Image (cartoon, rainbow, N blue to C red; front, side):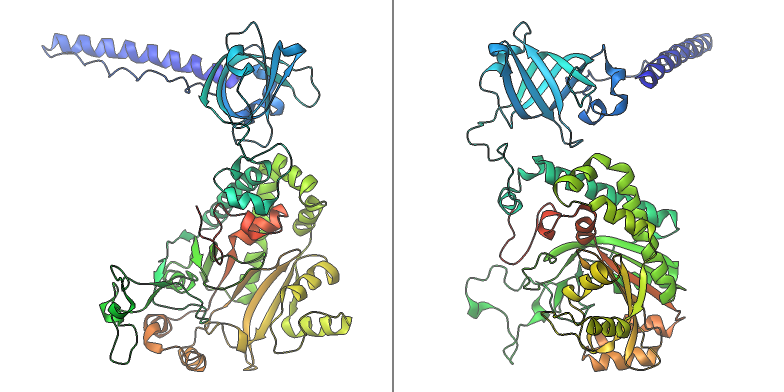
Length: 522
């Protein structure tokens, strides 16, 4: 509050100085026979919300600076209970700015007592004005002696679904319009926000350019075909027989909006490479889509991806950047969200903070795919999915490597080309590609990346092998015709990063409105 007082003093002094300068200027204008400067339009009147103090400032260690001041708070009632035979009420108020609630006491002598003593319960939104005093209660520095109360939005507590008891996360998904008011989803939202900020901060400070890549594309980046189609052929169609088709009985995309088959993107990578091959270092951060009929705790149909692409980076440079990136954003969250992270550590995953600290303090283990397969086979562990060279590693294998063998993140490189994407650089052995996956405890793969294939002839052969039409990738091939360079990149699933950071088990609980098979609600 001292800083606020200094600001007010400086502001008043500046207004006085400006008024004096204005008077002198008007005097000069009058001497010259000109009209005076008109007064600036009056400021609009302040609203009842203008002086609202967010709860996060009232629960900090510096909160004692508010003692003796009359302030306004707004928020939703978490709990309200009567004490002293109904002579005063205790209100726990939360406005979403922090996981902590702020305590307000209103006694029967205050004007606002009648408003809250009857009919007000959990979920009601209030504006309360009152005096800040030192709190005798344990665990809080200050509290408010409420005076004036304005009920902003009534709530029928009998029908309000957010009961005081612990609610299951799968139930909360059915009321996604209210679940941000819970401790868990509120904390996830604040951590997600800080992670997003940290991501942009990290790349901007390293000289990367933020690029927006298309959401609608004609290219299948992954070559897996699990894409959502984008079409207008069904617009206004009331019967299947009216859908435009070719003589061969196929959909006639020449009559479609884009004149060709189009899809929601599974990745911004290919477009990102265009700008990396001109701007050197770029990154994308946006929504991507997979029409994969998966019901696991790690998959969504709509999710967000961070995808940096770097010219003049080989696989080693790529791994170094990815490791540093993960450590940087986790460190940022631990510094900026201590209360939320303590909540996750206590109620979601015991030992979460120790696990994340281990990530920061330990260099990531680096092994090849071949070494990983040998290690897993030698353990004698019975996995649900067999381990053999030539088969992709599954989540159970990835977690065994990170949680049992190394007990920290692991970077696996040089996978067989058969189950990796066409754009990954073919190694000299002709069997593996310069790919890298970062595996972390509890999640498995969190980053997938590679050195990109910069040789035109090799890339053309790879497209033929995976049966992708060259004409759809002519512009991508041009990057290899006109000034090709060694370049690399990776993709990080944002929701998996939030899962890893918070300890939340199901990916559907770390995104505001989850999209998965059979569910596109809200």
